[in-house]
Length: 420
Image (cartoon, rainbow, N blue to C red):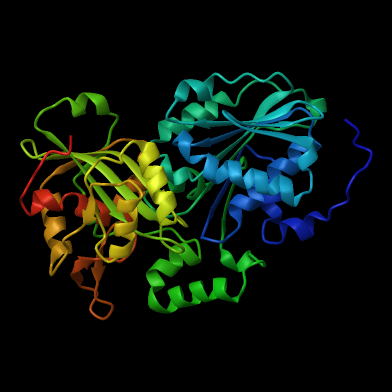
């Protein structure tokens, strides 16, 4: 390929400010926790595309806990970076399986999920060396041993004359101060670790409406602002649900049990909040709720919601949906979700639903990363004046939590029936 016709790009103008140390660091671990809109993911994507083209022997492994979440996150961010750097003609992008190739040299960007560990540890490259890895939304990785497995896969000697270096980049939102990421990388970082915090104030491309979101948050929800606005660690105190565990289980095997009933709930969202679909089984005899699947995405029209639910294979299931949007429920019904109906709600429905669920043991399949994030951050509210705990949850991390309550209404209020 002819590379002589080059376009000159000013990286400072493309990348922006706030990430000088991040851009230059060459130690083993480059860890960045940040608030929403801190441009950490976009900066990371720009760094990798720029440096893949700079270092002919470099290959990249991009990882999230669950493979299926990569396409709408890291894969999309790297495509954006390729476009922003005006180098689309030099890259081949494939979606099945997810893969990117730098055409002039054959260097590759691989995408893997920790839900298939064998594929993570068995990567071999044809050109150069597998020297870089990017773990996005690293808070999803609840077991440090999973990270250690990935860390050990970035191994092998690299000739000094290549100028290459081994590095794992870790980006995440700091929802929980008790996460192993804090102790390992932030509490006592060594010379091989860059541990940094960024927030929306370093993002010069936010407009007035974007900034207003954070100013409103700062005024109305200062506790939330410290985490989602400033990137501080979230302090988790007063969890609504502590009766849960993350565990792999056989979904098909559970479906065969006659005393198991399935339950589906849908909470609507669009611009600021995600549409959330809860998919679970309930065993009333043994007081167990099994969470086996989820849908969690912003910006979904009713048509897109129906399309995704049908594609997931749940079109014929009985789905309890948020009664605040009857027009959306009617539209979804007409689009093929023939058993969707509105949740009953009513006075004290939240506390009643929570009381019912607290009597059960909740087992969550590891692929339900958004459910795990919500349930581990869903807390009781407190009185701002007295500091006393209130008998209502904070209006945050509650989309799948609400969807779960809707799904289980028929059991918590009686009138149980089979969804098989």
